[in-house]
Length: 95
Image (cartoon, rainbow, N blue to C red; front, top):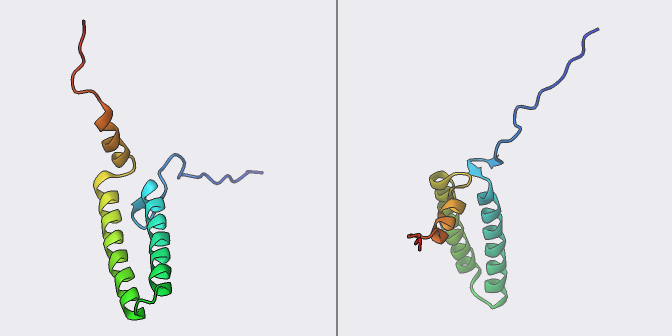
């Protein structure tokens, strides 16, 4: 009698959703929540509904393009490495 085992080949790979990798998924989710909050504030303050929708869709499109560009440009850990590079000393003095 032989046993059949399924092998999970996705172990130790980064999380990816429709081209977005790792932390960029969280950035996009946070941006969508911020846009929802902005729409609510604009609507409650009495701004015209059509203007609210146009502003939120315009900012949403810009946010999507920006986050997808960051994901494509820097990859899974690239943005964290870029931020960390600011803290690397330029010169090490030995006395």
